[in-house]
Length: 294
Image 1: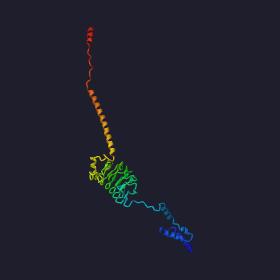
Image 2: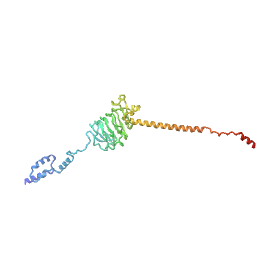
Image 3: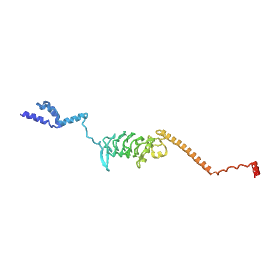
């Protein structure tokens, strides 16, 4: 009787064991007598489900998603904001909410921005990448943001040059100050595509990679003084365009000169008096015949 009760108690104790005691019970069940032994060797249903989940994920327990350490989402001025300032990031973080309108990744260790890094943010309006160590910017870094992005901060990085195609189609106001710019044609093309943030133009200064006579000088005054795209990248196309414009201008000048000459000649013709028809002299024979007849 007592052994039966002990057996029933042993079976009942396996219905809801704790996670910690299950292993010990599982090991000891090999020596458990009676019909309960096969059941004692199996874990409860909840533990079986956990084991199946672990097996389905390759042996790792799935973790609940959360923002990277040092990042947080907030509502600022009624707009969804995601801040990762001074978070020690070395790459653009994943898991940024899709409804983010303002994204702050400043004061980190980002060295590059890959293609399509923000294309999953369809309503992003403001992006702060300042005070990083950015040295490379993909030509498709801002792909997918043409209709939304309005403000971009790239100041205080290590940018020497940026591809102009990265800004094609963007209607943005950008801060490019405090970078060691090479002051080349690429930068000049970028300035044709964007608007500089107010008060940041004086901070675009030529760095050590620029021509020796340009190092330390502000870039904007140089753009007005010389054409940096005359040679090198884009220079051949620009020369072709200039030659075509000169040729077309020459033909237009010839046409205008011909029309002016034609109009002037017509005016001179209209101003001249009409010439009278010449009077034919009367021969003497005719006059004598006429007098005889009379």
